[in-house]
Amino acid sequence: MQSVTTDDLVEELSVSRETVRRDLLDMEALGLLRRVHGGAVSIEARSEPPLDVRSKLHVKEKQAIARAACDLITDHKVIFFDTGSTTIFLARQLATIHGLHVITNSLEAASQLQKDYHANRSSSRVSLLGGNMSVFDFATSGQQTIREISRVQADFAFASPTAIDHQHGAVNAVEEEAEVATAMLENSRENAVLADAAKFTASGNYRYCRFEQMDALVTDTKIRKHPDVARIIGERVKRFIIAE
Image (cartoon, rainbow, N blue to C red; front, side, top):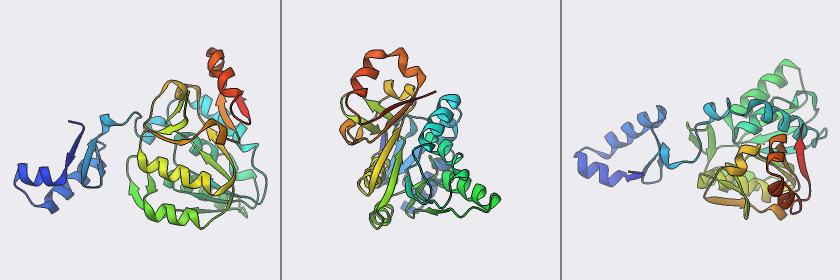
């Protein structure tokens, strides 16, 4: 079973809604499922593993992408970060850039940045967007998150998708995360999509950024193993950056 509703569980198990809610919270904390409005879906319904697992995959590639993305940022800018393992690697590169205001829905990225800024007595600052917290990727989402994003006109937005669809561009496995990324891109002057080469063969259901909307698409050298894909996509984005 890929999904279940709270009403079905109450009826089938003959328990209260509060008991179901508490049990679903406990199971989500263990990484066994993900709660959604009105019920829950299985982790297997997603096309990517939890954030702590993703952060250990393709590390060298993500570090190279982060360094290349960091070169796109100059001092005294307001930037958005969405949640994702690659944007967390980028967060670790930002301590040397002065006067930034980083706005993110990623608890992991915000924590990393705050530690670095405090250690370096940096003039930069970080804001964590409010909203509904997901323990799957330690990020906020929902209408509160979208509203807070809409109040800002950022200089740059960085998005880390689940996959790069060869026809449609950046896609995500989770609708709520796609909505946050869309809002960030719509409320920034420039953007960059960060995707290691493995994401060009991954999949997702929720589109949020066409190639023609990308100011930059940053990937790693393994994309050269797929020269036709690299050529076609490189012709569609404004800047196609292969991080060494």
